[in-house]
Length: 260
Ligand SMILES: [Zn+2]
Image (cartoon, rainbow, N blue to C red; front, side, top):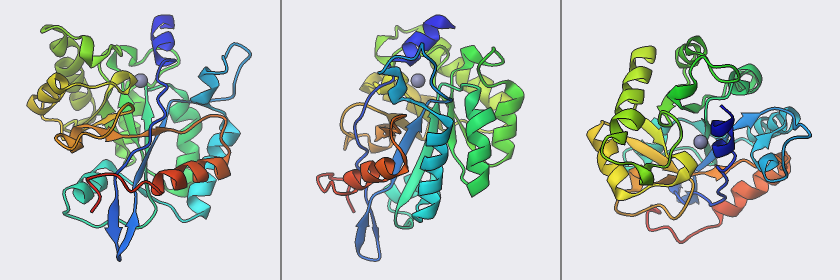
């Protein structure tokens, strides 16, 4: 687990998502937030680690800000329908996502989400199922039954760009099957470990029936927009006001060819 945590520590990419929606003639961007651990910092947490370990009070401030400022929390199906021009979404839409399946997402973050009626998508590494410090199978099933979305984050968090032919079964096919059997749902959404993707991975994701994939690094690719959806790390140092400023900064971007 230490190795996994160490790799998880490297999920540090601060690039803005650049999707836009047209609602009542106003350009409004849906923003995808990415959380990892939600817990108070310990003395062992490095400065870099604290960027993505969100202390409990900070997380409460983030969710409170989204609620108080009137952000509309959407799910991936809404985001994709918007992107395919099948649906308009409300102004100030935000998608909340969690990576790596740490237990704090259930024990600490979930009650805060529930306070505001927010739903989120949880990207799970299947190697950690039922292991100490990580989500259990029953917790994941409980999340699904409560209306949250379960996505896949590979078996053990290796970069998709490093796979050989046999790795796809281990890192994609089998984890997809495990999560599908656990939830009773088709698993439609994938988050690239470290946010890193390539076209070979997209081919495999399509073959496995995935509808969309979320990255953290690089521009959204106009050729594969559904499989290169960008997110921002909700930084553990940010209070609610700083998160709002980050979202607003993203809102100012006008350079995305997917803008419609
Ligand atoms: Zn990760």
